[in-house]
Image 1 (spheres, rainbow, N blue to C red):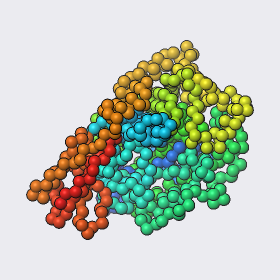
Image 2: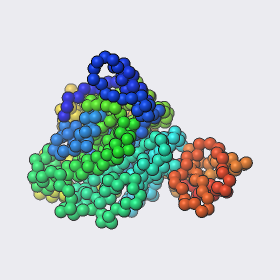
Image 3: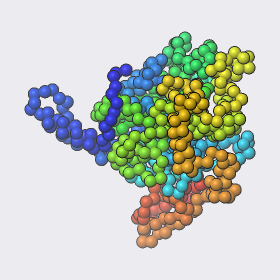
Image 4: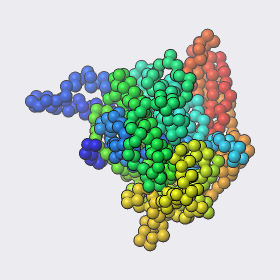
Length: 588
């Protein structure tokens, strides 16, 4: 990896990047030095008030790529992206699992502050005895994509959502396997999200992780393409990107057996396949002449897929790589080691679009026009129910130390999650545990109880194996992080001792059924349409149609009165996050 320097300057907005290019060109004229030739017309055509923004999101992904120090597998597309961009080694999810983390990304709020922290809120009701429900943030909260749509961006998601709430109809211009920036209006800026599922933990047992549906990324935007009906490839059909007898870096909390080495091969092989798909999307961007008008993010939705990684709030479950490529080589080949949390993504996205972050957002912008004046000092995380099994854990980390508070010390670390136990490595660990063949490091996860507090020096103990909470030499740091956790919990309104049943009652305003968004009130006077909803914070969407027309997509976000053309009728829906959608109202 090329030598990197710490990035200390604020990334400018795209219009300034292009202006700087033109200024540099003009000032170099006549100096007799070779320079890049960029004519005025080209510079002006590339200038945009608001950049396009592309998110490439993979699943269950620790820092297992060369740009972050792991050269086990070649990922040429990600390596190129890193060489042309900035790497951020200190990005942390708010949970060690996808749905709560995606709730944080979508809203800019901690999952445990909005009822999104139990995985999943809509599932395992037969085990928990609870009602299915959704996270319910305050009425002022919108999905980040909706804020951008209101600002004129074309917003697409391809195709996983999983936010712990149903996305309002107004959230996306399109969210499907066909969603793509290529379907936007002429010269419309876009925010496009592409999700890669090959690296998901299920890729360790179903059977080799390559899904035929993933070929959609090679055909993005082609609405005539039909994916194969068969779900997963067999072992013989799966592309092999590295030898199965590779010497893998097995962490000390996993046994070094043939079964575990086989799963490590699967994990790295799936990463290589994901890299190919990332390359396909980047090729499409370049083919469309949009590479230098677009800010590109690559990141994972939390840490790694293996046992004692996913679902846990050790760094192995929270830390995920982040690469950002800015147009025209800005800060290429550099590294920024500031702490970043998923709750910082929403305010940063607005900041890059030259929009101020919303007051309710609990994160801070780390780039753009509204970049925070101070870097983040701490990241925070939480873990509660996973499928049918509940624990209560909170964590706070600075750049060196991690503090974990276990609210159920009488309960062991390990949860017998059925889905995870499909992983061959998990089966192997349980077999070796029962046979008494795990060493003390590997056996620790299976202890019958755990300390109320844990403290780790992550710089010297990256696997978080040696608890320092009882060491008097670290009492000052322990007190500091205890106080920070107390402050954070109070600030976001998170009471970890509240049972999930009571949480649901609170989210539903003391009622025993999920609230429903009020039917929109539509007023038409002299062809001018005004719409409102009695539900505070409801997003309102509308469509204009004619009887003979195919139903148009998408729902337009209502922002104020508009004219209704002669012969048209409108369909209107209202939806507050966490509530059921209203009924659709039709008006001629």
